[in-house]
Amino acid sequence: MYKVDLNCDLGESFGNYKIGADEEILTFVTSANIACGFHAGDPAVMHKTVRLAIENEVSIGAHPGLPDLVGFGRRNMNISPEDAYDMVVYQVGALNAFVKAEGGKLQHVKPHGALYNMAAKNHILAKAIAEAIYKVDSQLILFGLSGSELIKAGEKVGLRTASEVFADRTYQEDGSLTPRTERNAVITDEGDAIKQVIKMVREGTVLCQQGFDIPIKAETICLHGDGVHALAFAQEINKQLEAFEINIKSFMK
Image 1 (cartoon, rainbow, N blue to C red):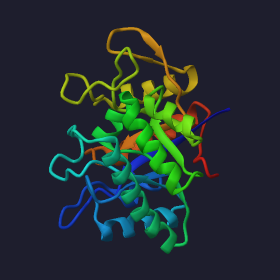
Image 2: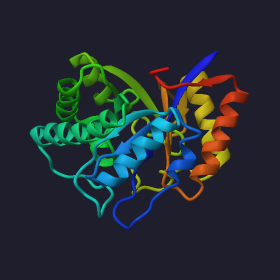
Image 3: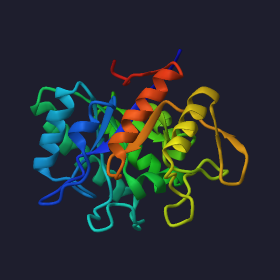
Image 4: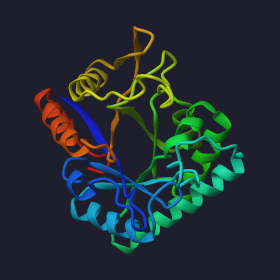
């Protein structure tokens, strides 16, 4: 029997802006990555999303990003390792306070957007992020791109890691995600995205944009909660994973 965690980026509303269908999607995922106020989210949204995750028995993770609300944290910034360390400690600490106040326990940390992608390739940034997480709580799980520098750094500092794959993103031959600025970066066809997920979990490979299969480790699958059809996709991927005898389970259960 195959097993995989299904995670989703949530809590991305802020102020008067509502993004995503968090309450509905929480019934179909096993882990929630909750924005911590830098790229999205605010204290009220963080509090509400944490409470909803606990009510739905969904494991909670901090989703720290770059301080870029306008760019949704998806634009690269020239930050130092010290900056990365401080940003992660600050954001994880903030979300963890809400989790503790609600009687829950933080399961993991998954960097967001550009911070995630930069750390996937830059071992110095990856090391700073991993050390920040370890210093806050050495029992936390670090979610990172399968085969990335972030996963390597987490393992090196002594963190438990979870190799993440993406349902709706395409891959390059080095295992990195196709940049969103390039054509075919996002898979828009629901059927194609589900086929890719099944292949990654059952076969441990993914078809890269250069036209051949590359190895990949799929321990947790990311769904994006801000898409137009996010809820319908979450429902369908649950159905298909079960049909292919893939058990959906978080790391804390």
